[in-house]
Length: 394
Ligand SMILES: *Cc1c(COP(=O)(O)O)cnc(C)c1O
Image (cartoon, rainbow, N blue to C red; front, top):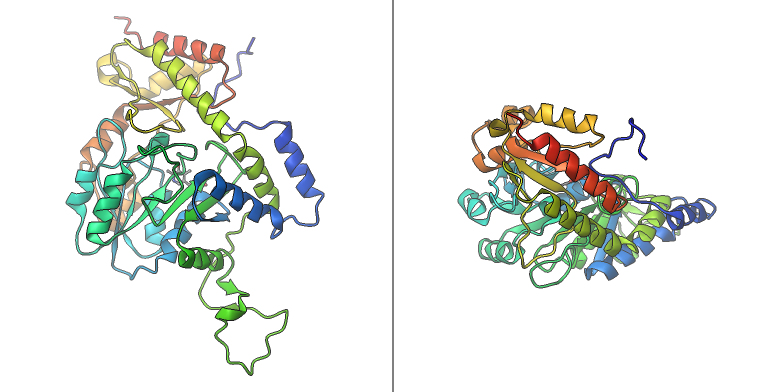
């Protein structure tokens, strides 16, 4: 039996003995960072997704920062992303002096809408950052067509979507429809390295830029040295040819990542099973909308988001969250539309009302606990609690 104090969080990592052993082995090895574990993890990410190159970095936000930086976009350009995302998706544009422009979501998938992207495209637009919200792939086939027609770069924010597949059955992260795809390995995401992220690409030139940007802009590749031949270039020698960062992932984290990646398909299958159980438990309940999955894709189901008509229910979201918490059910809200954040209002003049679909979605959103170590019994009990709290009593 669960004690009264135990609360199901909305998301949680799943670690087992093999993960602990992988980390332990690395801690006893000569390399805590800049050793072989990082390249091994990158190779495993390429093998899993089908992309040619991977660059593991300190977190998903760093991955987005470097992905935009590698494109060398001139200041004054615009990049389009979804308002229904975590702060990092537009922030990476701001880091690179690209103006963030938001395109409203599709009311059914909660993903950025192609029509809305088209509406916001101008001659200043250089880059699209579609976000695979809750793990459901965006319609990338059509985004790629639009990007090609308008000569735009595409970076997929797949922080939620490792393990998901596109309509063609291939895996998110293969970069078939984009220049780069980023992942996050934060503990609430599908696999974890504590903090961590990666950028996937099939473009060798981008890959080499990303490697340099990850480590201070340094290169040790003799064929690319720029200093004249009379400058001695021994084993110690390196050149800084661009301004980079220290965004490295440690070997400790990478070893955990490789171990977690082996379990990814199982994690996603378990998440999808939990989603089916929730759907069975909650269907028919009035005043709610269950998550919609486009039949042609396979979502990784990072989140299980209900849309709840709080006004008709006669309880606000705070009350519902409190009542669920009292029953041991933690919930969360994904996401406050980013354009409404004070920073974005103050810096760009964006306002409430600008993205009506994302704002309407936000007013009704509530994420239920979803992680692979939830048992069927846990899920049925959470479903029961949700039914009790969402049943109108008047
Ligand atoms: C988590 C997340 C990120 C950032 O990843 P971190 O590893 O936390 O920096 C970016 N985009 C989305 C959509 C996310 O959910």
